[in-house]
Length: 257
Image 1 (cartoon, rainbow, N blue to C red):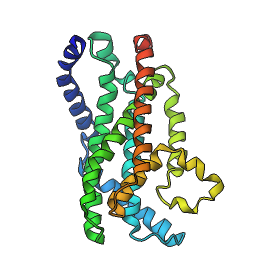
Image 2: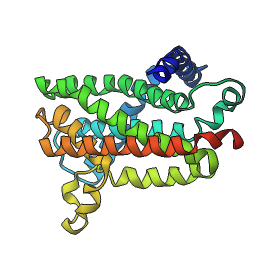
Image 3: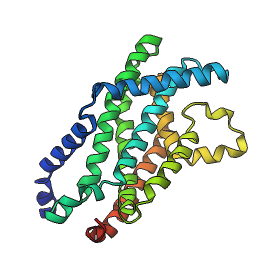
Image 4: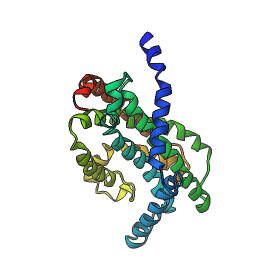
């Protein structure tokens, strides 16, 4: 209890770190936060042309289908990649004063989460423009976002830990996330995948979070209990694993920063 009270006093510092990182991200940017909205829109327009026109993929209201996948995977990808260098880039703080080291990882995930919330504006605009259903099931979105946040935080703890010791991990993770993106059925329906390879997609955590997002925003229905249970299990297990890895290695961070 005493330890928790001691760490609570550092949350003001966490807030300032998040504000600093967000300001740094948009510093001298002509569009600023508006770019967070325009980026998924522009990407969606290109992908809609490529996959709906050139490849003749007949997915009703494809822009919404695509944006649902882009928003969820974009958050996981962006927050986890930023977390890779979260310890190293804050070496000055780590060497000079005591701050709970997990705050630096948490701040990157919160930063990515804020960006995701801004990108939802693009989704809402296109839902209005295309006549997508606005149903009471949209109230399930906060639960989905909590699960995605927990999963991404756990993954980020692991990446921040090994990213401190292995600097080349940033390049390797970039290759991995490209493969991960194409295996997450963001641009195409998973039904086109041969049944013999479908198990690879079933093991992909991102595809379950994207599926829940599409159920809520694209189909206007409640996600299945099975998908919610799987998504919850992935989130909890990843967070437990992430905390365990981070805690077991954090005492050695100062030797590598």
